[in-house]
Structure formats: C-alpha cells, structure tokens
Image: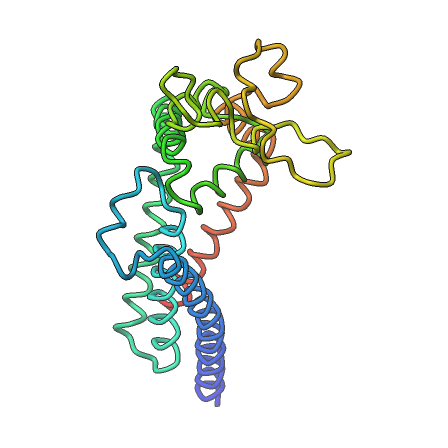
Amino acid sequence: MSRKQHHFKGAEVSCCVKYFLFGFNIIFWLLGAAFLSIGLWAWAEKGVLSNISSITDLGGFDPVWLFIVVGGVMFILGFAGCIGALRENTFLLKFFSVFLGLIFFLELTAGILAFVFKDWIKDQLNFFINNNVKAYRDDIDLQNLIDFAQEYWSCCGAHGPNDWNLNIYFNCTDSNPSRERCGVPFSCCVKDPAEDVLNTQCGYDVRLQGELDQQKYIYTKGCVGQFEKWLQDNLIIVAGIFVGIALLQTEQICLNEA
C-alpha cells in the first residue's frame, strides 16, 4: 500500500512539474515570437530584409538587433522547453537545460568581469556612445535610443556636449554647412515645464555660447557619468533584478532535471 501511495505522489509531482514547465515555457515562447516579429517588422520597414547587405552599412548600433537576438534565443528556448515538457522529450529538455545553463554561466562571467575590469568597461562604454553619436542621423531607431537615453539620464554626449563635434551635422568646423552646426540634439535641452509643444530646434547654435550660459539651455553632464550615478543610486534594484533572473534560470534548470 505504501509503495502505491509513494508511486501516486511521485506521479502527481511529476505531472505538476510537467505542466508548470509547459505553462512557463509557452509564455516564454510567445514573448520570444513577439520580440522576433517586432524586430523583423522593423527591419522590413527600413528595407533591411530586401537588402541584407545594408545590415553592415550602419556605423553605429542598430537597436533592432536586441529584439532579433533576444527574441530568437527566447523563441528557441521556449520551443524546446514547451515541446520537451509536453511530449516528455528528454533530448529537448536536456537541450533546454544546457542552453539555459550556458546563458547563466555567461551572465555570471560577464558580471564578474564587469566588476574586475570596471575601467575597461567604462572605456568601452565611452567608445560605444561616441561611435553611435557619429551615426546619430543614420538610423531612426538609433536616433530614438540616443534621444531616450539623453532625456532619461539628463545628459548630453558621452562626457559632455562637445562630443557632438564627432557628428558631421553638429560639428563646429567652418566647412560644415548644416543648420545644426555647433548645436546639439533636442534631447540635450533642459525641458521648460511651461512649454506644451516640443521645441526640436532648442539646441541650435547653443555650443557657440560659454559653458555657464550653456547650462541654462542644455544638459552639460556626460551620459557615462550619469549612467554610473544612476547605477549607484539604484544598485539594490538592479542587483535584485539580476538575482531574480538568476534564481528563475536556476529553478528552470532544476525542474528540468527533476
């Protein structure tokens, strides 16, 4: 009798684990499909899908890559976990566990390296921002990403407004015919609460003024420093998110091994 009870309990637990994994992974799968669809739609709108070689033409970072890569990984993992749990396919479940374990290991390694090589990470962040400042007008998604970052962190450029000299439209050289010469994007401007309509020309010619006068109209702090400050101010929240993701990944690996 005790053997039968133990068998029924084991089967019940296995059934619960099976359908929990299935439910979790089908949500994961659908989210991955949504991200992937958004990424492909964005590329179709920009004509990338009809001219694949244009992927390498952008000098800066294309934010659509985030949707494509993250969506693709989520779609594959979700598919393997969902079908593996439903059909009790050990190969797919092992694939799911190993892939998730590899991602967890890479996240852990990246976190340790980021802590050990903080100065190198800072230099790379500075290089990344300046490289994208150069390509600001080349891609609408990149432009929106930079504008969002500068508005959210109340910053301008990597280290300050003069970083916009790297962009052909905003640099202060005499040979620059652009109306935006010696200016900055509108996202660098200090917002006036009294203004109902966004003034996209608020940064025109602003760098022709002295630094003290610039502070009245634009943010003069760089985004690298502001990002560091934001991380320090929100360290507990950021750490909590990463720990939560790590625990969720570990739980999924353990459940697959159950």
